[in-house]
Amino acid sequence: MPENAMKLADFLLAMIAKDEAMARAALEQDIVDDAPARWRDEPLDLVIGMSRVWAGTGQAVVPHAYHHQGAHIARHDPARVLAECEAKRRIVEIHGNGDAWCDYCAGYAEGMQDECHTGRLLALPYADHPDYREEWKP
Image 1 (cartoon, rainbow, N blue to C red):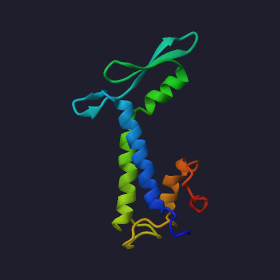
Image 2: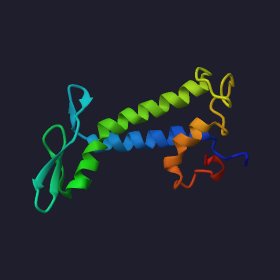
Image 3: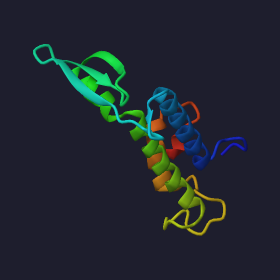
Image 4: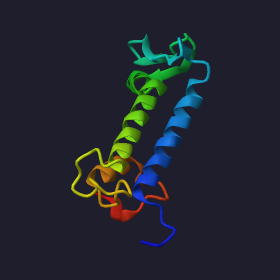
């Protein structure tokens, strides 16, 4: 590994932070009682299969989408992305603390190792990123 190559845990934390920033930007004013509001999909035209995605505050986020697209967008709203970011970050952190049993990481003071199968699986969705390393493929 080149000396300046990013470690798997650092890569994951950077990707998680980017996902989180994008979700927060998508929320804009879509906060209700200090929590992100959930998005919902509403059919517009059942014959054509069009729908609209609404933010929790009642603003149309996507005014016209095919129903399957609208349902997908609503299901992966910023609130869900933020929850997923938190879960992924905790997985990386518990590996770093030696609190998770991992054949590669448990007890290592350095945190999640590049050989960790858990980390490699978490990194897989980012395989198209230029900093992703081929040796991380599970």
